Length: 191
Image 1: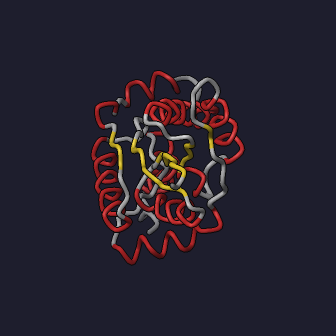
Image 2: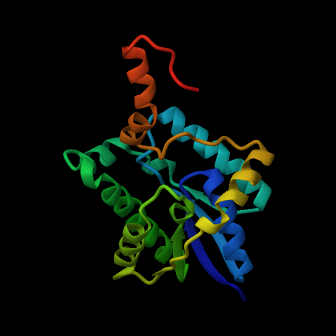
């Protein structure tokens, strides 16, 4: 019998390679979509639909925590902490993932955030280990970045929506700030 692992998933494209890598290690993978940080709601819904598409292609069971989609809670936790917002965002999502994993009888949990070359891996690792303290589910750290290109190519081949920013309002602003600056200067935005 395969060991069960709960994979917190931030979006469909970022789930592809981690699911395959974990299965290659003999793990039975289920996913969790819990992302109250994603802004706006229309973006959350696009990413949810993308995960549904990926889940269908991978025959992946998914727990959707739409009832816990609460951007106001995300903003309360990150307000006036912009320099450290990622830590609080990781903590919010991985703590909940650890609780759900333990309640669901998963001996292990991890996150597709570890697939991204743009995320803070050491912070994620420490937050995951801290989240596992006191629950009956261990954090499984694996650096999935070596599969970045493979995941991108697969998501494009499947026609899966690929977001242009991490998810929160801050990252959206950072991603599109160049376009705003060009508009202010009366220039055509790049791209």
